[in-house]
Amino acid sequence: LSCALSASKRATFAMFAVASTQASATAAVSAPRAARRTNVASAVGQSHALSSKSSVAVTGANVAALRCTARATAASSLFGASSSDSKRRADRMSVRVSATASAATPAASGGFKWKGANLKAAAMAISLGLFVNFVVPCPAGVLPQAWSLLAIFLSTVAGLVLTPLPVGAWAFCGLSVTVVTKTLTFQQAFSAMTNEVIWLIVLAFFFAKGFVQTGLGDRVATFFVKVLGKSTLGLSYGLTISEALLAPAMPSTTARAGGVYLPIIKSLAKNAGSEPGPTANKIGAYLIQSQLQASGHSSAMCMTAAAQNLLSLKLAASLGVVIVSPWLMWFKAACVPAIVGLAVTPYIVFKLFPPEIQDTPNAPKEAAAKLEKMGPLSQDETLVLATMGLTVVLWIFGDAIGMSSVTAAMLGMSLQLITGVISWQNCLEEKGAWDTLLWFAVLIGMSAQLNALGFISFLSNSVSGTLTSMNLGWEAIFVLLHAVYYVIHYLFASQTAQVAALTTAFMAMMIASGTPPMLACLTMAFHTNLFGAITHYASGQGALYFGSGYVSMADTLRLGGIMGIVNMLIWGVVGGLWWKVIGLY
Image 1: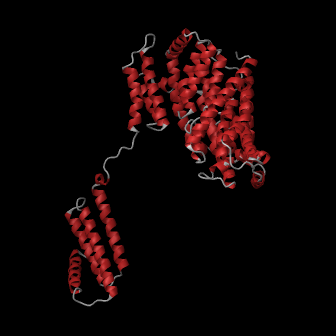
Image 2: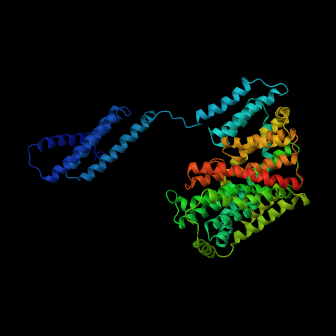
Image 3: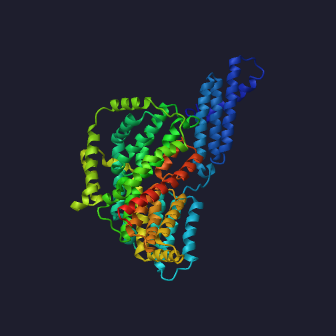
């Protein structure tokens, strides 16, 4: 009625409504009429209340019109309209009032709200840089430009730990500061964008996408469950061995965890009646922790098994340590301690964190049924197998024909794109790859410039000189620096971030103290994989497994601390003896 009638007609209806209401006080009315009048009175009261609340936001004329509308609605109801019709009209009117008030006074609905960076975390990170740059005096022998760059670098690294913004965004801000303050030129700031290792890491993300998308990784893991899955411990060994075999061709520990092993473990646990919560310890919690702890050895065994491995070798090269046939040399040095670690880790976790269910007779049958349902290798799986097989062969023997690791990866990925195994849209949607490209490039670029400006050599010579003055041999300094590097990771939420921030300096200090360069660089690269499970935030895979909800925070930290020390002992003792045998020192 309010939309169809003129203002004068609405007033007439309103007057009639008042007269009808007054007459109804002395007249006998039926129950239905009384019920309708009660509903209408409620609607009129709500409309008046809404008009009153909106009077600040709308003009007086609008308020009057809205009130007339409400009264007209009441009159229409008294003429015989049902209470539901009246309610619908009142609801429509309420929407109009709310929309008008909202449009007129947007600030009244909440005011200004900060949606940017975490100001407290940002202030802490920036304060560190300002303190270094303006309060701490620049040491003699260090260029002012290098000191300013160090301050920006420290603020950037602090931001990666405190995360006032996403990692890529904060790194970009740090990079911008180096250019704005003219600490670096634009070309120097972006020089690392052409770094081979960074692009190899980006390609690793794409390769992992192919394994997950085609289901080939799932097939491999399920096969080992079928073969070794009669007991819970056997299940763990089957999953561990399969990851060790997949790792060289799937160069992302996080992708292996999230795309292959976590879904399989959750399925196995669910079938055994183990869910997050009271039943987690039946089988799920053990499988989660065993796989997480063993993944460090899988990642350390091969150069191409994890992104941080490639970065470590690039940083070693910046110090003049170039490894001939790096894939083979890496595997030769890492295979013995890695195999020992893979052999004992599931058993040690089994003893420290025993599952309630220790026999799983149905798991092989379920795995066999799943494989039968999958059928033979699909076309895409076959193509992934062929292209990745070629890529791995070229990674191993590429030096003999003059083909670098990144060139081999580019060839393999090009073949996958051409054959349609993975589409360019899939690559564009892999946000983690592009984010990594930016923030890795920023940290590597800053680190390289600090080295070029002489700061890294100044730091390494100063620290090694101090340690040497304490009459410590290179062996003691070597162990001490590794211990410090391990403990520092409790402050980092990324293995690769720690590599980019600290590895160059630690390698340089070891070499300056007399440690054989090859030993220093390879062991630092191995080391970075061994603390990825000490906390729930120590690595991408750590966060994924903890997020499944099977293992409590207390158990995660307890087992992580114990197994971290076990890993260091395995690689320090077994690895140390093996490295002596092969002549690393």
